[in-house]
Length: 101
Image 1 (spheres, rainbow, N blue to C red):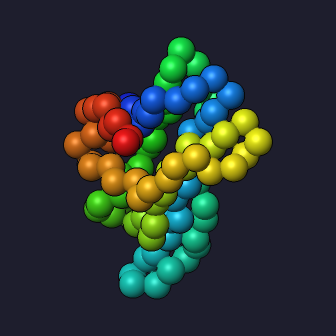
Image 2: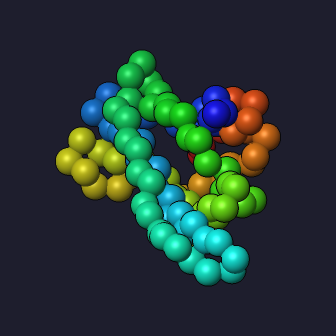
């Protein structure tokens, strides 16, 4: 169990932060299962923040992140800003802040 990285972005009331990771789990070089990890949180106090339990750079045990992205969403669900999500193993293990631009 790890504390997870603290992903955050400046956001207005009504906006929300969504993260999405495509994760593949394999064994002996064969993919066994693939799944989507998604989390979303509404902004509060000028910021949207959540904890992410996966690093995006290295394998997570038998799992690896195929892609990772973040989106800042308006109240109507439209994308205000987005980008690739890059989170180190150190951030996940030590619970470090990962601010988004």
